[in-house]
Length: 82
Image (cartoon, rainbow, N blue to C red):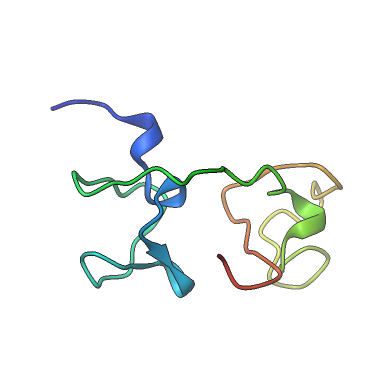
């Protein structure tokens, strides 16, 4: 089995709103990968607490540590994903 760090769904052009795979039609997470992976032309580099929908809300999974420019695996976009 090959390890493909860059082939995660969050970097795939086939990822649609609500973490839905546009090819397979199923909900996916950041740990999914597949052979239909198509790299996004540009990776977003704005994933941090300030751009997270959960920042400073009761849904934040790390409220004691969350701070501007901090990254975490529970990031959620404030607007729909392109």
